[in-house]
Length: 125
Image 1 (cartoon, rainbow, N blue to C red):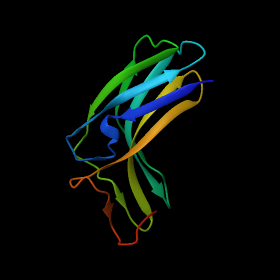
Image 2 (cartoon, one colour):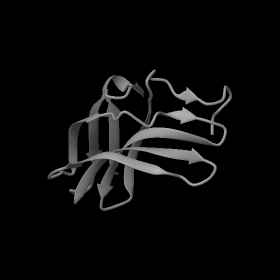
Image 3 (cartoon, helix red, strand yellow):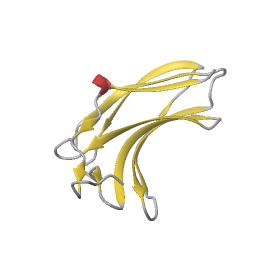
């Protein structure tokens, strides 16, 4: 059975711009993969067209069938995590293995306060 894991340092889920997003990416596969990538990105969810912005990616060289690698991304200045009536912007880091459609994803919040910005008191798109 294949297994992918993403662990953020100290299990944090709230960050500010410019902070480091650190953690460990791990996998246990039946055979050595051709490639393993870690992607830092934001995306929108809600009504209308979904948008995605790839901010950074890290390709792990010479991945073994069972492996674990540390990572560190410095978060950009923007965009901030927010929720509104019609749309939300979320941040995530995703571990992707090739070949196959295998991925592991961890969502987190990034804003000046470290908390999601609510555009309406009852917002959750």
